[in-house]
Image (cartoon, chains in turn blue, purple):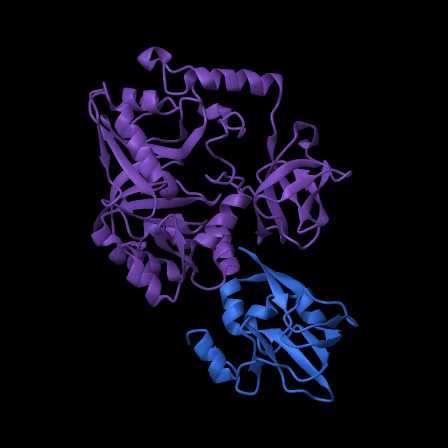
Length: 125
Length: 372
């Protein structure tokens, strides 16, 4: 699955949308979802929590392993995706769409993120 | 060190498999969704490349007596074409590997070892053959191993062979021709389902894989990787060496004392590990050691190997050996060694999952048993 051009990416395999009314959406990439295998459980940060870029904010559990979830940007969590909590397989089937994880009211401008082409190169694509 | 490739490597690449290093072999972990692969084996059929398993042939007039000496089982008592689950132990009774032994002929047996232990088993058998009129042969490169597992596997395999599959009972084997190629057919597996394992020449592996794929597609057969093999065997309560079994445990510690045959009549009953295992048996009867149990979690976080099992006070009472989300049960399951006081089905304990005590219930093994 190719990495959508309209998103920015962290080296830890999260994606971030452009900011709309101060809020951006975060998910994990298809590359990461594929590496995890079938995701069976997602632990997401609480709404209202303030998180800092690079911080561990949750975990993704798959058949074979559990992986930390990092946030690619700083801000306040304003919404989590209840659909993906109820059906974690969305992370695998629609990583860039229905499998989004949480929304963040950004503090400052995200730094150190990659373009789609840069991220594709980062993952050896 | 470069990874060893099976005869089916190009097939796995063409199928887009995610590969993994397993005991020095580059093996398919999964082709697509491991949950779908798991469910295919439970409800239809799955096709596995298990060529990493280690085949060792022991032949000669005293092959049976030699294996009675080298292993804990009563191997010489096996009828021709029968198979048995057994173990090889150290002199101190510790489990070196768990094995399946097939009697392939009057004077010939095939020992199948785990990939991770195959060299050790070969070395031990080579040492233990001394004094017996028998020969130990490394046949790891002589065979590719393909398994077709699941309720539709008899129909699929039956369409490719004239062999008497209904007559081929569980834990028996038969030399046969499948899709025009010679194969040793065995009704064995590690999934908790009906199924077959085909020991074939590496040069025939691709043709047989393709024939089984073509015959199986109409039934819903899909290629399956090692990831679902692990969840399948876990649901079936089957131990995996390095998890439930290791050198510091005896078969009695693992609740598998039944594989130790003190009633062997060959070699005057002597076999490697006997004295230590007799003590282990007495000890297990007098003071039960930690017991291997099943755990089921009502939550969603998954107990994993090496996590601690704790009681209501948070005291460590055991340790997880294997854990995974169970596709069949729809919840996390695990196997663990726990103190005998907490080993009764129904006991409520907890697992320390990264600092959080997740409640789990002790259940009897296996988690899943197929309807027969």
